[in-house]
Length: 355
Length: 159
Image (cartoon, rainbow over all chains, first blue to last red; front, side, top):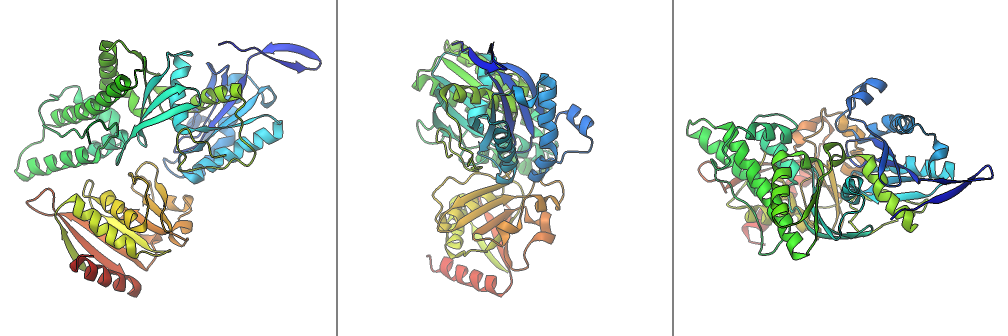
C-alpha cells in the first residue's frame, strides 16, 4: 500500500510523506523518534545510549521514573535535529500510554498532548506491546498476515496473533516471571552481574546444554502461557545442592542448560501457536530477541515449517520510540486518533483502547 | 514473632490468601527472603485474599504492579532501585499511605522509608527439603500484632 497525502503550504500543494514523532517512556528508557511513512526511520533517540549521556551530561539513573522529566525535552529536540526537521514539519505525535509505570508513562503522555495541542496536530495513543509488534513492520513493511509474534523482554513474555494493524489477539503470556527477568535472576544467583541476558548468552557458548537437567514448564495441554519461576528456582536449588555437597558448579554448563530450557519453551510455544493459527509469518520482538540461541533456533525451526521469520535488529527490539511511531502510522491511516483527555493506563490490555 | 512451616508453593498461597482476607486500606506488608524463595508466590496468595482476579506477575521490572480487588493492591519490588532515595521518585507515599494495601518485596533495601507500623514476613528455605519454607511473621505495632495473632488462630483452625 502506498499513500500520498497532500498538504497546502503557503498556497502550494506538495506531495509529501507522513512524518510522525513517536515518544516512549513506559519504563526505563526515554525515547523519541521521527518515522516517515511508517517505514523510514529519520531518527530514533534512546536515552541509555552513550551519545545522549555525553551530550546532555550526568548519569541517567536506571530506575527513577520521574527522571524522564529531565530528559524528555532534550530527547525530543535531538530526535528532530537528527531528522533535520522542526516541530512544524510533524504531521502527528504518537505516545505509549500503557502498559507501564504510571509516573513514567505520564511524562510521555503529557509531552505528547502538549505538542499535539500546541501544533494542532493529531494525537495518537499506542499500546507498548503493539509497538514491539510493529518493530517488525520497520524491517518488513508488508509481512504476510496473520503472523505470530513473540514479545520477550525483561518485563514481558507474550505471544500475539497479529491479524493486521489494530487487530490482535493475546494467545499467551507469562504467569509469573518474564523470560528476560528469569535470565537476570539466574545470572544474579550465579553471581554473574547485570544485565543477565548477554552474560549468560556469552558464558553458555562454551557450555554443554545437556549437562544440567532442568524442568521445562509447558503448563496444561495446549496452553500457550509461560512460566519461568519454577525454572529459576530449579537453578537455585541446583546451585545450593552442588555447593552444599562441597562440589564445584560448572558455570558454562549451567548457563548453557538454562538458556536451552528457556529457548526450548519460547520456540516450542511460538511454533505451536503458528501451527494452530496457520500463520505464514513468525515475528520476534523485545530485548530478549537479542539472544543468539533464540534467534537461531526460531529461524531454524520456523524455517523447517516453511514459515517466514522476521527478526528486527537489536536496537528496534529494546524499548524505542521508532516502533511506537510505526504503529501510530497505521492508526493515522485509519484516523484512529486519541482525544486530548488521553491518560496513562498502567495495566492497558492489548487490543482494547482506553482513551 | 510467629512461625509457619509450609510444605509447598500451594501452602504458601493458602497462607497468603488467609492474610489477604484480613488486610485493610493502609496495610503494609514487607516480603523478605532470597531469590526464588517464594515472595511473589506469597504475594499471589495475598492478592487472592484481597479479591484480585487478575494474574499476579513479578513486579521486578515494572517496579510497581497495581491490582483492584475489594480495595487497590500495590505490589512493589524495590530490588532494582540503585539507591533507596529513588523510592521518592516513585511517589511511595501515595502507596504506603493511600487507599489500598501495599506489598513490598526486598523491603530491607528501603528501611528508612518504611512505615513504623507494618508486618515483616521473612521466608527462608528449610534444610533438607527443596519444597519446604519457613515463614516468619514479625508484626511492627499493636494493630499488626493483633492481625498476626488472628491469622495464626485462623490458620490453626483451618479457615
